[in-house]
Length: 468
Image (cartoon, rainbow, N blue to C red):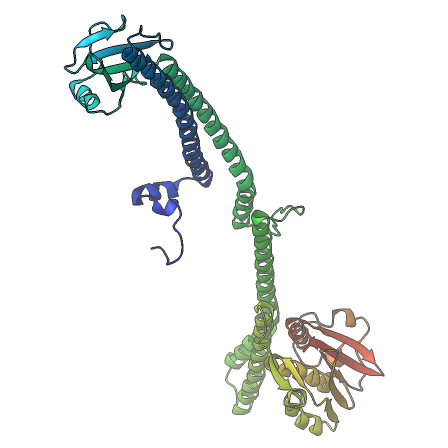
């Protein structure tokens, strides 16, 4: 089906079977065939034009010579003088109204050059022109003749003037041979150049295919060798494939990390669950002992749920192409994140204050709210004293800071604070999975920003800086 307004290619106009056969050929073969067919058409057209122009010039010369010779014969008959010699290879015949030969060149003899129909046409005043013999295949005694009526004192006569076409036909045959040779050599050269060009153009594609096959066999860290000194369709394809390989490798790394993290972190709570159940089943237990066992199992199950949710959130953030930004008021955003922790702060006798600039930011509240909540929860769980949340916009960037008045981060922990499952000293690791700060950094990265942990004024400080 051809879309309206969209021209069909020559390939689309091929018959169905031929198009199917052509489509099964290798790309290089198809390109060479396309070049060969196109060049054949161009060369045929060019050769035909050259041949026509030369033939026209030679024929015009013959016509002029015949016309001049015929006129000289007519003048000689009218004046009664001797018939003049014509051009080299010329012949003549003088016929009466009944087709009888009155005078004739010796080479012609008594053979009439005109057919009865041609004689009748000439007697009616028409100029008769005809070729005797053919160019191909070669025939002897090829002639071109002209016949016309001439009125003389002795009655109506028909003058037939002819000239041999041998030189003209030989020149045309030689021209055909040269054109065929030149066209054949040109076609071979064009096909060879087309073949070499196609091979050279598709050589990078073959390298890419080989590299892709190597990747399919399990090769790691594979990248295509794309030239850096040019920019064409093939190099753009290579860059696109390399970006695809980068994303595939990043996806594989995330998958391996997820599996490794999950297997590492789930092993301990699962082992504790198994131990609790085994102990409970080892011998009959009282209701109070079973109640304690179930509470312990419930705590481990809750820990598994929290850990699983955190791992899934990190995986979703790492694999998403982009986040969904929407305008949101900054005070509402911060209050939504802080509100669930106010009762915890009150029970612990600690202050929790949030100061947010009265402005609107363009961000994904669905991810920023839990990230801020993680920072507040960490400060309440691992820090000391009052927790202070500040948020403002500076030069198009949202800067959010969470501080506490505790002992701060151990210096050796700061370089790996945002690593998954990274934990500080026991003073800050009584609870938690070690994924809170990793989640905060993932949210910042997804927004195109950064997260930074440091000690400030005797307490811990975590800064979230994202464009808004």
